Image 1: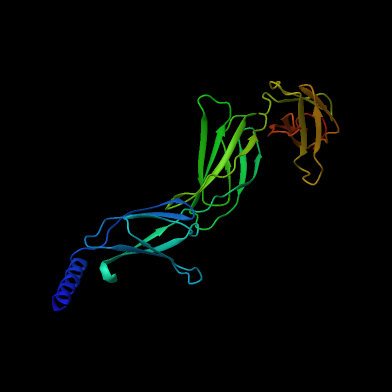
Image 2: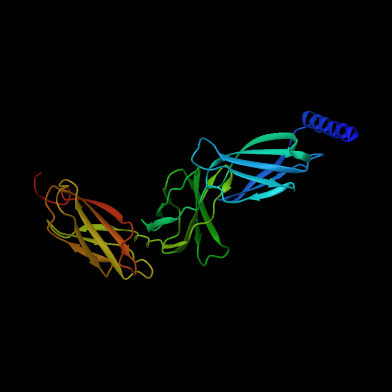
Length: 294
């Protein structure tokens, strides 16, 4: 019996010696999803098992996750998305003798954000809104041009829950999706929203006086466009309602122009959904086109 206790005491002292001489070593921690952490560590000589302890930093309301593991790798599940965790790894010998402990701060990737709205605001720009998620540091927006070969993909990074993608092609279909991101990596891909950019405006818009209070606006045709929208604004009278009219041709006569006034005339192309794009705008001054004294 005395020999047994002596052997146990020697083993205990050797385990303590190992615990002092070397430290536990966490090799890697990755977050494959918003609710998991994949932890790998080096094998510790003399260890019988390991204990993983994960606690959300600065939170006492969320219960810790504790696992006993016999291998040197574990996928920890059931975690909170986008949270900073204090990860404690401890190695134990026989009879629960502690050998070493190491602490590492880590983080889960955020949950997936979803695009809540997408709207083409011009022939080359789309405006987006998306859901805000916990623990995010940035959002990465991707816009893929459908039917392009090779595939053209645009991306931009934002720090808020809205953004705009510019430099796109007119009258083109785009598949749009977003990733939430933090220091642990990207969250899951959002659902895809399909949006079509508006039609480009006509070129060479010209305004010619045809009388004291009338003028004619003309423009070049746009391919596959059957309808145009013409908007006349009286700059000197901002409270005066704008005049908005549609035309199926490439010209329009404008009347009831006030003398000594400054106007802008915009011409937009209208798509098949009857949505006008951004206008090509010209200025018109009745002061230089009228015999009236101003």
